[in-house]
Image (cartoon, rainbow, N blue to C red; front, top):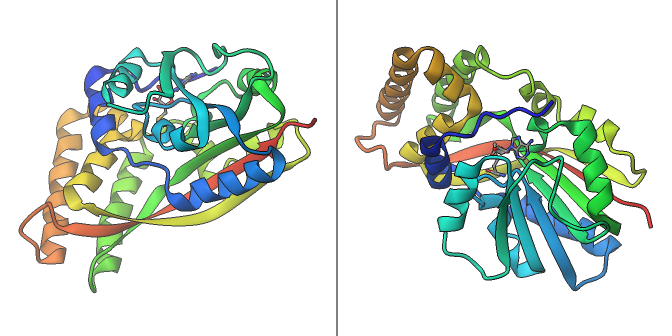
Length: 271
Ligand SMILES: C[S@@+](CC[C@H](N)C(=O)[O-])C[C@H]1O[C@@H](n2cnc3c(N)ncnc32)[C@H](O)[C@@H]1O
């Protein structure tokens, strides 16, 4: 079964505002893997579960065409509003039924998304559309992070660790696939040329308000908000106040460095 938790318009618009682009470290690993297996120039990339397109648009310089797909109409609507490169298009459709021809795709990506799909059906669809020697890249950040700021990184990280402890109760069981570093998904990929890279740390400077905004886009926060709206908003206010107090700052525009822990799975379809 696939899982649908990203359908509301407001959620989609917050997504566009707060979700982060895949970082250079991950993109470089993907392209060195792809380029070793499939010579340039690259034709078509498909980014599945693209949300509002953060993970799609970054592919545009490397391919003749890029297609971003998502099951949520609201997410695709937001993605289309971003002025972008002419070679990027979007389509609302399930990951398990992609609107592309057999053996036509050089690279298929899924950023923070594959764990929501029906894995068995999706992997069959991936096999149908990848070219021989075409590659797949599934990656995600894990549900934990560190927040670094001057000499109070430990206290700041504790604030956000407490947030993840609270949100853990509202976590969908599919997040266990992420927590375990996509091990299960990796094992289900029917290709022998495959690797799983864990503990890729990406360090991203962002304002406290952007970090708190990002937390609010998480599916587990959305579930908390639906179940106990007052408590969920109270948690957000508390995080903001505790953080400002610890940092000795007065503005939520104060910039912190957030360390994300990522997993990346790469595989290549045989000739
Ligand atoms: C956490 S978001 C990731 C968005 C974006 N790739 C990013 O990196 O920020 C997961 C996305 O997967 C989509 N999704 C979930 N199940 C899906 C399915 N079966 N088919 C296609 N998209 C799906 C959701 O609508 C959501 O936009």
